[in-house]
Length: 529
Image (cartoon, rainbow, N blue to C red; front, top):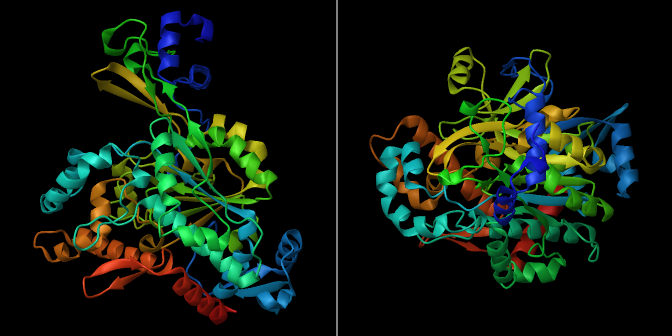
């Protein structure tokens, strides 16, 4: 097993200069060696798609939910939420039937105990890459060529979170992914203030994991966001400021040797053919359970008990108070959102179960082959695609962060590039599902919760700028249908979660004023009360 003292001083100096966490890399190499170079997972069971009637999967489109009365009484007492229990539903013996509006109001009362986290990732190099985008939809790429020419260079040099979340109908950029998320967070905080009359209690802290390539640019953007009209008055009104997030910077891992060099693997030391030179590479978002450990502890010390976690590039990732309340009332230790897979869902994970019935998520192409998925789909099993939205209980998560960091499967991918033949170690956040006791799977509608943008093409497909292209001949029907769903979903999100309205004369999406938002939220709360 390779040790720190085994490394040549020149290699150590080179990796330290490049920001690689050498000790963590050696620790992961030790785990790989213990598992014969495959993965940190010891589960050798085969995987299959779960049946649609699996009891661990909750279709979140029912109108009423039956909750054990004791669960509600316990939750109300724990968080000091006013009763009586009859306020929250209709009593039937030991059960309480709660409607979605009642769950929503309960979820809003949980905002002082909830944090909202974003995995910011690296720069949007692949996101804006013309070759990758063309592969996704060759016909549409030709139609969008001018937008790739206009926005591509700037996108590639920026963290994805501060690139436009959509393009207006005239091709001008809309607000960034992060700016929209911050506005949504503040709207939820305003909703709590209106409902409870509480003007002082800290609400919905925002936290993030960044990388060495994004931290400084994000800080610069956030300084500008504080004065942005989309946020400024809401910050003053709610006393909540997401532009000052808690966070931690994800370090890099050293590249390791290519599989052709056999086992045990070692730290790669021949970058560009030069002796004692290594490479520093991202280790995947699964590193958050280790990197953000101090942040999770700080949040807990502030009274936070529930944390949302999601990818920055999903415009559908917002706080859902109905889901929050349902999760808080459940025995689940974590909740994960999945939607039915569509033709553009090619990069991400699918829900699977082992022969013993344990649920997990595997990356398509890496953990589970596309051919296997197609075969099982042909047998009538729907594929549930990971929406990259998770909700965790800190009481359960905190004492397990270290073990999760070491037990998450390690994915080793061989590379053959200018720097040489080497391999990269990565961990996926969402494979934590397979490590948790009692995970809750929430099946949602893609157009409501999963408007992801792994590629700029997906952003364009969901944007108003592409609406007219759906009439173009030659576009496959399934792609046309998906694009329409995405456009409808974005329109609904802009209206409800982000506080925008459509000026039909242009058409153009513009933000409501804070006064208009207050009136709309007040009306909604009165209606649901």
